[in-house]
Amino acid sequence: MASTWSNRWIHYWLGSISALPVVVILVSGLLLQVKKQVPWVQPPEQKGAGKIPAITMGAILEACQSVPEAGVVSWGDISRVDIRPSRGMMKVLVKNNWEVQIDFQTGQVLQVAYRRSDLIESFHDGSWFGDWAKIGLFLPAGLILLVLWVTGLVLFVQPYRRKGQRGRDLAKG
Image 1: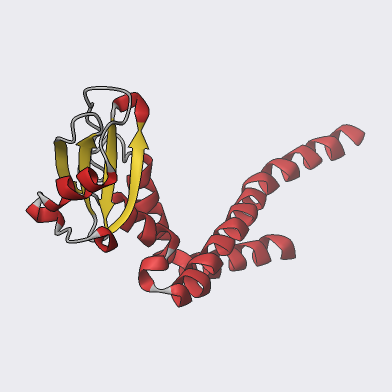
Image 2: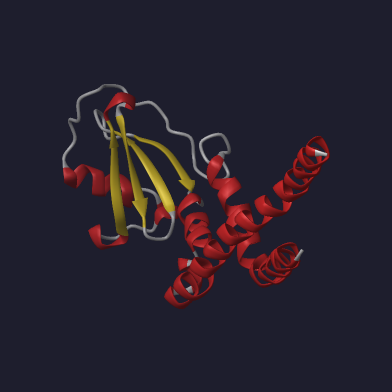
């Protein structure tokens, strides 16, 4: 009996304390789960003309600079370049969350779109709020979620165990 009460007490209070960070983790996790299917989260990948990269690094920078939305002035504005050989293109991710997709055979800009998946990921792990929130709120919320899962499982299994025990006690006579 005491174990059921303590499990419920733990479940109740830890659930209340961790509710807000867990909702942020849940909603952002759901959005990240469907990022390839929802263009609003992450722009779909376009296809380039060939499979072998033929443009120079300078041509990549020039292609990005030709896109006003991206706001690229120098390599310092670019956070990373992802090369997709199977699709014949590369994605240039700008620090302001814009994505420029470039055909790596011709240097033509295939698509320009705002990319939200990195921002959503920073919400998901808490880093958007700062290191204090990532370590001080979201990590404990994750650990609390693990404890909630265990106590919830115990609360779920206990009635079945009791029912089985009663049946065995009755069979013994």
